[in-house]
Image 1 (cartoon, rainbow, N blue to C red):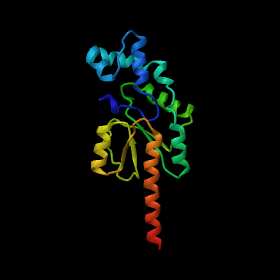
Image 2: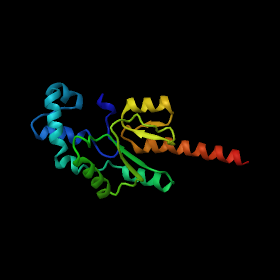
Image 3: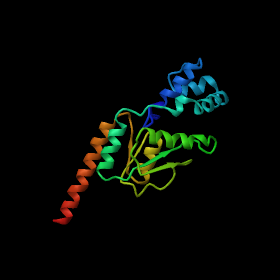
Image 4: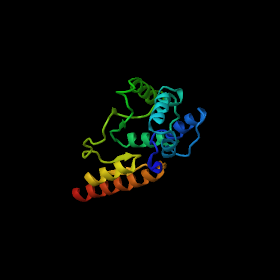
Length: 174
């Protein structure tokens, strides 16, 4: 459900639910909105949202920049990936690139993907906001962490992982 639908870099679904509220539809969750509005009207409203300034100028989640800069400064190669529907809404590609640039989000690559079933086995770790994908990645590669709204918790887990890796390297060298 919605508990697992927190975007890592912004506050979605809050801006989407606020957009619905401004347009006269108040819901506590995406699931509630889908159930009440019905599939067709829900996706019509979602299309309007995707052309709105609310989508274009979303604030960056507190702690996201600091978290990414810490990873970058530690030598990590950062790939930002998004499932934004850029084929159906081509302007979202430019808007997303502009958003990343405007907010000075550190990264090495920005990837627009339609399907997350791509090979991330080479990645030291993956941070995702979708519980199902985290489970899938962990089943395949064991390198995924669920973003639950707290960068501090993930950073602590990753620091432990990095420390274990460094200790393992030191033992090999001895």
